[in-house]
Image (cartoon, rainbow, N blue to C red; front, side, top):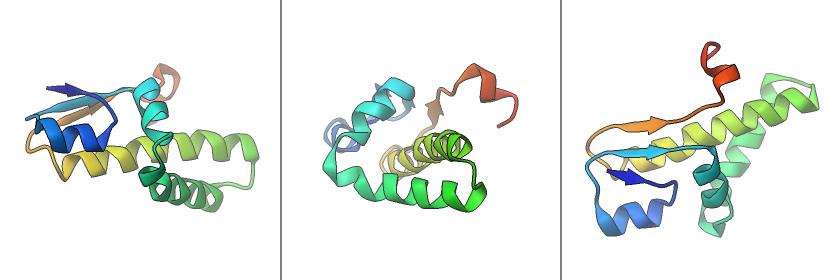
Length: 91
């Protein structure tokens, strides 16, 4: 089980399952190779709402999904992504 958002670490250690959370996603977002995942999340969020605050929320959620999808390409098991409890019932 890997507890990270670092896709390179997943390649190195080849875990069977993974879990990630907002702080791990934030750390992974600082890695230049993941810029395309951020750009995609921002573009998607802008299509969902014209409200800037909502765009930030939507982009954050989409970034977690994007990183999770990248991890699933490497991990044969499951990935658990922690989300803000206030949003969990909406998702």
